[in-house]
Image 1 (tube, rainbow, N blue to C red):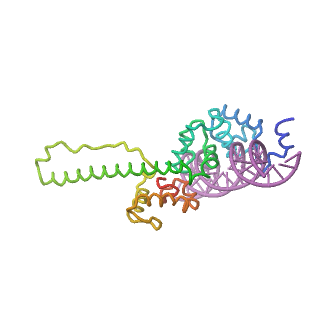
Image 2: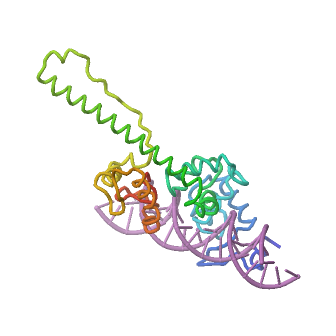
Image 3: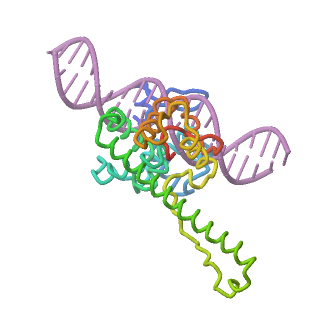
Length: 253
DNA sequence: AAGCTAGTCAACCGCGTTGTA
DNA sequence: GTACAACGCGGTTGACTAGCT
């Protein structure tokens, strides 16, 4: 008896519009592996035609990426990996695929499931929560410092230009070095001025739920709490990388 | 032993993005 | 410029399992 027949007898593999659904059987896995060996990854929609699988492209891709890929690590995540996940989640939020790229052999699905079961429930009270918050705070301070430095440099340069236009002698001095700083984004917004703008306006102009601008701790509490206030309703924004609106799930997101 | 509950994880779904004709 | 298909991503669901009562 083939795997397929057995699965059908057990009630697996519902056929929906010609596509099989539900758990994969060994025979299907084998066909998919053979297909990828021959044709490589991609062109998932042609798998059914070429490999004779009654699965749609999406399903094939998912099965390969999350389960069949030979470079996948099996077994529990190590404490080291766990630590990385916590830190990267503090930085990137729910960008599971981005986080997964830093953990070779782990899939976004795996990390997402792991996060949901291990961290989500204890987020508020846990040490990890405080850690993540501290990390964000540090990143923010670093960013602010960098920004200040840049502003200072810019001011110095501007002043020099003003003075030099009126004082010929200054022109003999070596020009202001062009500081090409290798700024590693401490948070994704840094690549997008709109988001920096959002954060700055939040801090400078206040936000309905941000109580005291002068009280740093309060700001951080308010920012963090936006996660709960807005997070759920903005999941779609978190998903897409649209720059038009920030996701409040994390201040540095 | 049986029933219930919570945890885990594979798979599905919907939507946004990207590539191409 | 537009329409369509393929791909990729994050959220959610549901089957299975282990532990508890």
